[in-house]
Image (cartoon, rainbow, N blue to C red; front, side, top):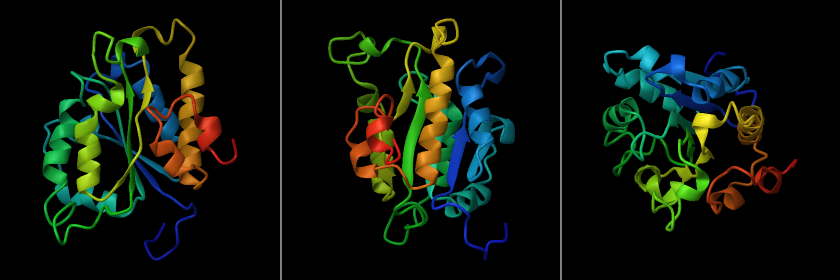
Length: 211
């Protein structure tokens, strides 16, 4: 679509997909494929695009400028993202572009992380063996979004991901993922209500205005 034409959807979504071993991915890779089939959603495979981590900053910043929402799609690695997403943040979110007195390129854009976690949900709380909620563990991303003037949403998380397929939980998760992206794209998502949730999962009926 030429740049001078209005977008066909209220909000264009950029999904930054990061999984270093996609051939073994039972959750994140299917989520990337489902997102790629949605009009108005752009999926970038960061490991596929930059196998040597030589990130094209101008290209990535141009992508950010032409989208209204940014999603990190990844497995939870050591309570954070896979390494290429950290490299992407370090290089792409430059002073004067993403933050600073003249760095307003991301102001008002929506951001959240969609992830898979190996442990059960009960492990992600003060009494669990991970001691923190998944949202608390991702506070560096939340603060990054805040510094960049973005609208931060809680993560969309699949817990117990290692057994999601054999437990029959993947299909429902994929359906919820597509619904979330569609609601965000079509401006049906109640952002203020969604922002107060611990995770986006399980409450789509209350934050999707067409619920």
